[in-house]
Length: 298
Image (cartoon, rainbow, N blue to C red; front, side, top):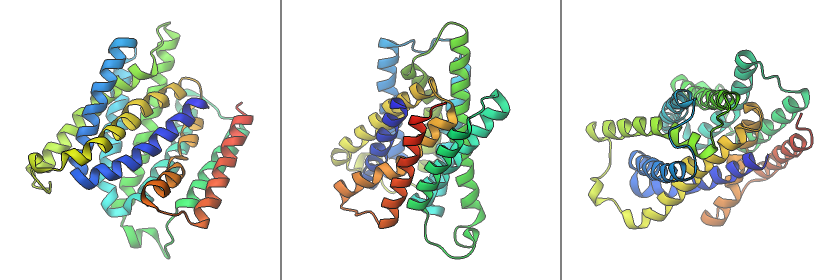
């Protein structure tokens, strides 16, 4: 529970820093630089204190990274201009947990208790209450089926990437060669970095970048890129993998679904964005679900 909570806080900090870095560098370059920095940090930690590229589940972690970092992140960036950050975050965080739980149930036979299902539902309901946009009529009429489909793909990518990662960890543990969370994050991010480089190159070739790389405001962007890289794909993912070693994926992803709510106080502090009453109510509901989950772990 501690690891999942730590991952939630780090992911929230990463989201705030990402917003600032994208303002300076644009989405493609900001994402590429944060992935590159995170890969270097994880490489140093994994080779210095972990197993590096070793372990019996390297292939599983690479596939998990392709799905979780590659497909998921690509779908998120494509969905953002169609759905907006709020609805994209809502779809990914709220749909990923039940997709992961159902996948583990069908594939790995990991059955959640009725209390865990209830707590996860309460958490997701709280997130939905706090962040759901106030729209009338069919969502497709406002956002289009393509945008909603991309959001669903991103949620499935995040869920299946997490399930494959946990499966690889269980195989490594059963083989008597458990892999630490930092090394798992490192092995996964390598595949994600390949996707990120390809996406950045495509945006440059297609003329979608707004400015030449050497003319970008690197100095003011640097601290936010560094915070984003350290708190998100490096230390945040490492804490996330640590949590997956100890709890079912559905439980971990239900807790990390609190990430959008954890952003609220950070945005209030940094950007002076005051939360609405509905956001506060949803936050209390979601936190109540986490408390129940902590008191009834099995």
